[in-house]
Length: 420
Image 1 (tube, one colour):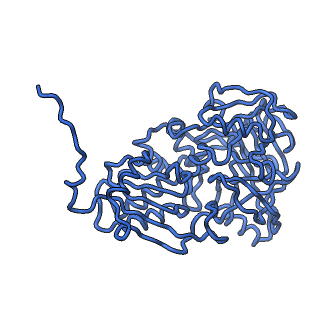
Image 2 (cartoon, helix red, strand yellow):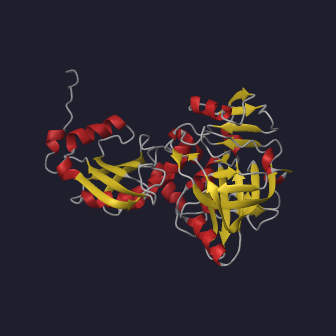
Image 3 (spheres, helix red, strand yellow):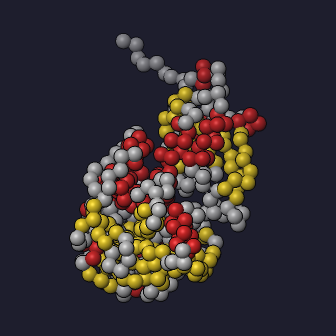
């Protein structure tokens, strides 16, 4: 149940600085898990590129590409409650925030950012929430955090309405299954730690924090305890996010740090923004939601978010059987992932993980005047630099399925085998 067990024996690099040098090595070696030792100015090692491809995610979860969506859906419906133990490795020793080798990734970033931390918070009505957010280290006692209008934002708003700070904890360096669960986007009130337990086939072990009423994964490498200060906002950014472009500067909440604990010989996990690891952990947990939404109106084979759309903005859905109303399929797909900007609907003879086959379907099965569906002024993703300030965008659905009744015209030519 820890990060160390998963990474095995990564390739070692020595003497790399937290200011751009570690980021550069990760960027130039996307297919390698790298361990950085002898980091100048720090006693802790750094590991990055823990996930290098989709197969790594399947391996971590204990599934494969064919079964992935059904597996995740089934596990999410059968949560396993975590257990709180008396002590955990994550609290073996203490340090200060400035002792952690947090990385500066890109030239114009607003500073050094924690990108692999899972944020744990509680609400009197909704219970525990676990989510992932970028966090700007301001000084040894304060962290800026970008919070989009989802569950953690709701928890913070409710605490501010009561005139209270929101207690939180940040766990860094967790088992990839826990990180995946924190990336999932279930209904409010669903405990992501219980989902992690379902994936792990057993309860996740948690330990109580020392200064806040929060429980965190007992085997995390680092834990930062603190509180989001009510009513305080400070500029956060720029930050190169999942698209590889800089997200705009905004006034965002501030975390006051109350304690930092860590495992003995802790390893800091660096997650490079816009890397395949970042994109897959953002996008793959949304694919079951797209599949589920479209399944309400059609027989679906698979759904995915594509590499070209940074595993966030572009989706493809393959249908086992094409319904009369493909427009409804498109609209349900957008409901399944509200940040998706374009979606292509294809038949199940198309491999949706192969961009050439998707392009082939569009080039031969799609007529723009008939098969394009345009939706203006829709809520999209603020990570798309072409949206307006409010994140409004124009969404497009493309019906690239075989026109009904013309299936014989789309039969692939075959060369017969040798005569016996």
